[in-house]
Length: 453
Ligand code: SF4
View 1: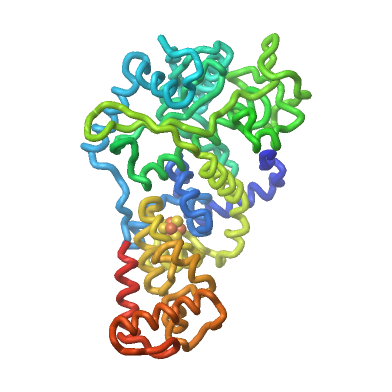
View 2 (view 1 turned 90 degrees about the vertical axis):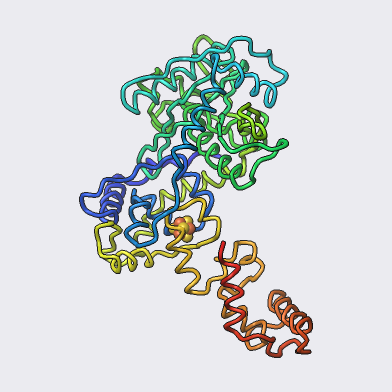
C-alpha cells in the first residue's frame, strides 16, 4: 500500500490548518511535541476525536487535565526510573553482547551468531542532526552485513505535517540487513509471560518505531512495507522506488521528495540500492526475568498495532474535519477559566473506555463525564459492542424491564432473559418484561460499581 502523499494537501490549506490548530492550542502556547507514547496511545483508542484534535493541535494534555480539575495519574517514581535505567544499562553492557545474543536466539537463530557487535556513535547536534546520523548509521550497518546495535537512535516521523522525534531503546541490524526494534522494559516476565496490558502498551509503542523506521528504509531503498515475503509487502511494493539518498543531507527528505527509478534487482549494486532494507514486524521485548535483574526476552508481533497506528496517523492529517465542527472561538489553553475549558473539551466527541486510564492524560475527566452521561462504554468496549444500539445505562435498564427496545434484537432479548433469571434467583418470580427486583437506582449503582475501573 502506498503511503498517503501529505504533500498533496494544498499549501494554503495546510497553512490555514496550522493557524486553526494554533488558535485551538491558545495564543502564545507552544505546541507539545508528540512522542512515541503519545502516538501509541492514539492506537489504544482509535475512535476518539477529542484525543485526535488535542494531539493534532499540540495541546499539553497534562496541563489541560490539571486545569480541568482532573489531573492525570501518569508518571514514574524516581525509584522505578532509576531501576529501569540500571536494567537497560545492564542489557546493553559489553557492546550489547547479551542483547544481540537475545535477538539472535529469539528472532534470527539461523543467522551467524553474534560474536562481536558494532555499536556506532550516534551523537550529533540537535534532533535533525541525530536523525540524519541515525539514518547514515543504519545504511552503513545494512551494507556492512554485520550484527550492529544502535543505542537510542533518533527517528523522525511526519505527523500532521510536523516532525515527531522518536527514540527507541535500541535498533538491531541483522547480518542479512534487516532491522529489529528492541524495547527494554523494567516490568518482570514471570515464567515467560508478562502483564498483558503492559505488553500491549509496549507493542503499540514499538509499532510506532517500526513505522518511523520504515520511513527511513523507504528513503534508503524502495517502499516502506517491511519484510520481503510478507503478503502485505508483496501486494504493496511499488513498482518505482526512490533513488539512493546522499546521506545525511537527504536523510530527512520524504519519500515523495526523493527522485525515483525503476525497481531493479534486490540489494545494493555498485552503491545503488534497489530494494529497501527490511524492517521486521516482530520486535524484541526485553524484561527482567522473574524477580531477578537478569534479562529475558520475548518476540512480539506488532503487525496489528502497526496497522492501527498507521491508520490513526493518516487520520490525523484530516483533523481539519474535526476542527471544522468546533464552535468558533474554541480554545484549549490551560489559562482559561475551568468552565470555559470544560465547555471547549466537551464540544469534541470522545469515546471513553477503561483502556484510557493507562493511555491518556484526560482519562479521569472523560471517565467522570462518561459516567455522568450513563454511557455504557465506561463499562468496557466488549460490553459496549455486545449491547449494540443501547448506548446508555438508562437504555439498557429500560430494555431489560421491557419498556423499550425491539424484542427481536438479540441484545434486548438477552437483557430480558438476564433480568428474568435475576428475578428468579432473587425469588420474585418476575417474568420477562416485568419489573426486575431492585430499584432502577440500585441497578444503576451496580453499573456504576462496575465502572470503578
Ligand atoms: S481519555 Fe478522553 S480524550 Fe483521552 S482517549 Fe479517552 S476518551 Fe479520548
